[in-house]
Image (tube, rainbow, N blue to C red):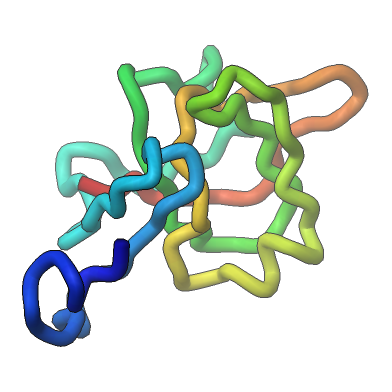
Length: 113
């Protein structure tokens, strides 16, 4: 269901709707989490998993290896990340992996709230 159907008004510029893996119900992001800096998984000591689910805003393009809310592992390729740099990636995420098989997360991201 669209925002206008639920709320009866246009989407404010500071909000974006992401619906993938949100159970068919849109969720809204109003800001980045100021308690978390831009994350660079190449220097983090472990996977990023704050629980239960979150969204990311891609800051610099590079592979980003994630586990979606559905439990499926997924690689956001550098090409995809370049298309979404500066935007909220349209998926609900459970974990960002440092490495996933032969792939390494090299792109940076901030976390939505």
